[in-house]
Amino acid sequence: MEFKGILILLIISGTLSILILGASYILGYKQPDMEKVSVYECGFDPFDNPGNPFSVRFFLIGILFLIFDLEISFLFPWAVTYMGLPLFGYWVVMLFLFILTLGLIYEWIEGGLEWEN
Image (cartoon, rainbow, N blue to C red; front, side, top):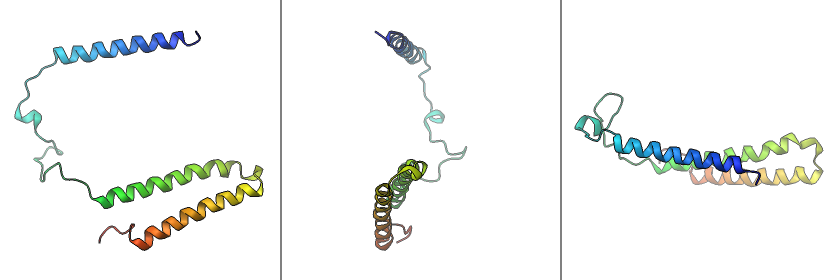
């Protein structure tokens, strides 16, 4: 068994983690007061309800950022090996970029990039 040392390490660290977590739960101070359970906002009383949801536009812009960020991670290996690729590799990446550009144009036309409506 090649990974016996790693298995022993995982068992010991898991057991130790459970023991420390249990000890902190058992020995911890459990008398919350209003000051301790109140919402903290930079030392001031909160101005608004802290449970207000974010705007859907915020999530849409975040998802679009992730999509185009992933595009860069797909293009990096191509850029590194560009000189060694055949012409087919070049056209596959151009097709990939064309499809992403069409998606960006569609989002732009539909108003997905506008913050205010």
